[in-house]
Structure formats: structure tokens, C-alpha cells
Image 1 (cartoon, rainbow, N blue to C red):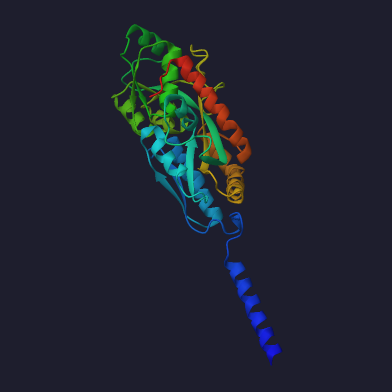
Image 2: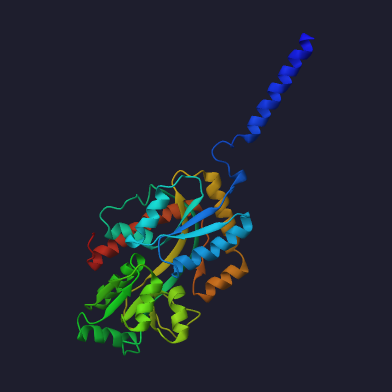
Length: 328
């Protein structure tokens, strides 16, 4: 009887141990059950801009693949720093992602004290794509070429108003003003969409904008592109010259989009997200959609992105010094 009782106790203990082991999360935050709840993507800009459009497209595709909602949460303000800080302070579990763009590596060049460390406070999930900017003018500016715009800016100091979304767009606008050698007023907005609304309505004269944000206004005829900031002409606009071809040599500006998350997120979770995003980017439909916006798919590993970020920060620090931009 004692033997049977002992065997029963051992069996119960073994069953309990196995049950607890089955319920216990895998060590080091295994991605086996990830995601188990909705994922939130913080977009630190207003709705309607290129970052928002990119986040919603990739987020929608990811939701279909993993069977969980991917919620886009717009948190504009402070040149993207408000939304970025939310991700820096989030729980490192992969459920809070940052829709990052080149403004992320530009802010350290113009902000004395960031509320986060751009190198230490983030892990990188996936690169999404890249694309050029367009130099555009609205109906309130009677010019038809970049050379005419430059001539007007030099003839009328502080006359031209450049609408800028802040962050990246502020930086490339300041770069344009510096390279053009003109005195122009930069008006800051909370996002690319509201900035272009003022340009198309005549409240501002021009904008240096991403193709994704500007193209709908260009198609409607309310915004005129004068040049691309890329090193080559756009397939979608083969007749549009580069800035160098149009009379502004040395001006080159483009944007990239990537997803980051809070530092300390388990590598297995990051790798799973990277694998899912890479599968989305490899789809012919994704490449076609990107191409229609004059953007290119850009697939990289988390390690490759980590290596890129410090180099990009250093690059824009130099550009800021050369352009005479001051840290605030």
C-alpha cells in the first residue's frame, strides 16, 4: 500500500511539474507564442504623412500574417520626440514598435538634450524602404523651374516661406536653404500633410516633401515639382530633373523607413518580427506599391540596421555643422 501511495504521489508531482513547465514562459522570451495580443506601432508624426502611410500598409500586412491586430497610434509633436520617447520607455517585449524615419538620426544633430539615447534605448526590428524627396512649389509662387525659384529667393530675401513638417523635413528644408544660398522663412507644422495643405492653398510658398506625401497634390495639379533630391531621376517622373541637373549641385536628400522597438526586447521576438516583415517586403505586390510611390524596398537584418544608425547620426551631425544649424 505504501508503495502504491508513493508511486501515486510521484506521479502527481511529475504531472504538476510538467503542467507548470507547459504554462511557464520559455526562457529568454521565446517568440514561440508571439504575438499573443495586439501590437502597437507608434508613429511620431500626424496622420497622412509618409511615415503614417508606410506604418499602416506594413502594419496591415503584418496583422494578416500573425493573426493579431496591429494598431497604428499617431503621437505627433516635438519633432517626433514625443512618440519616440514612448517607445524608449515601453516594456521591452516587442508589442510596442516605433515607425522610425531619417528624422530619428537627424534629431541628435539639432537637439541638445534628447529625452532618450538614440543608440542605447532602441533595438532595431526591420528596415522597410527608402525614397527621395521632391522640391515643390504651390500656386502662390510664379516659377516653373528650380533656377527660377533660386533667382527669386536671391532677389527677394526672406520672401519665400518653406512649409516644413519638422524633424526630417525641417532638416532637408534647412539643407535646401543653405545649399541654395537664399534667405527663406521655414514655417514648422506637425506633419507633412498639413504642411502641404498650406502650400497648395497659398498660405506657404514651397515645401521639400517626400514623394508619398506630395504625389496626390501633384496629380491634382495643386503642387508643382521642380526637382528630386535623389541622385537619379524617378521612374514615376522621368522628366523631372535631379537637383544637381536643375541647378543645385551638392544637394542630395532622401528618406528611409524602419521599425524599432525598446532596448532589451528578446532577440527571438525581434527575429520573428524581422522574418515576418521581410516576407511582406518580398511580395511582388509590396515592391509594386513602393515603386508607385518612387520608393524602394530595403531588406536588412537587425544587426545591419544597428550598424547603420550610428553612422547616419554622425553624417547628419556633419551636415548640421556645415549648414550652420544650431542645437536647441
